[in-house]
Length: 450
Image (cartoon, rainbow, N blue to C red; front, side, top):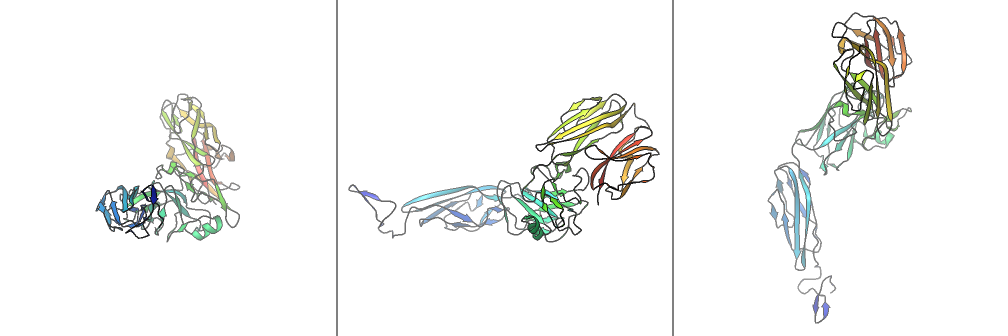
């Protein structure tokens, strides 16, 4: 008999298996189980996969009930407390023994604490409703696999099958997985019922026990990304660990995924995370006009891409320069002041330059109007819009301005009660600058949809 082990007898190595038969060897320990992701109170059964014909087994299950077993294939090991637990197996026979320990083998999830996050939403691609290209993307932010069996969604109706989601994996849920695969080569799961609301709604992920593990209440208006509704652009969370309930953490997707019949492009990154796009920003002041010597809070809002650096320039302001996203500035001199912002990321830079952006008054009075006194209706608009105001004032100039600062259309001596035509202007985000005869200037956002 030839064996892998032997014994030295009178200077010679003797290989034999007396009383052992011919199928023995030093065992090599290995095992599998019915699950590695469970919830408190659930049970796991283990199966011995060791080679070498072991004759005894010693299992240890820290955190499990029971915590030890001598069975070859122990069943019904119960875990009652959330945590991550190792499992060890020692096998032996007359030739020797071997051990294996799997650290972080059984993950017992705390109800409502599984780290899955919604990271991309396509709520209105531009196709007629019901929109066949609607989808949402989720990411496993855990450092271990998660079995989604029994997990569910709200907003759109979906109960997940027995599917293991790997750490860092992106999973796409689509209204039509067939069309996503046919047109764009994207693998997705089809949800069971429902549509994404074009104006926004609450989306929720729930674990198998019914606890909410993630919720996103998106909108088609600020502070959520603008210019996505009906333009075949999704919205995306570029940092999957950021708070996805906060609209400013999202951006419009500007990466072309492909073309669907008719020649229109779809801008999205389903299933492979976010790639930074060209930055597009909008600036806002919490007071405009503002009294002298009062703090004005400026904010930079991402409309496309994700901005990493900000260079602000404030004519007559203190400070006159800032490199933070949302600076605070004081102006001493009355009149118009220029504001410039250069927003940048790894892809490039975007500049907004308004020679007359903020108007500073001497003191609080009748000329200092709150930002909410005037609005554009309808907004979004299709063919035209009008200015709705709670005060009596004459407009001396109305301009439609592109996000880059270029004047698209100008209305001189406009009619206060009239409508302003949008003929010749494509869909997207614009700004409307309104100048009044008392020197007040207001800049408002306008979304044009077709």
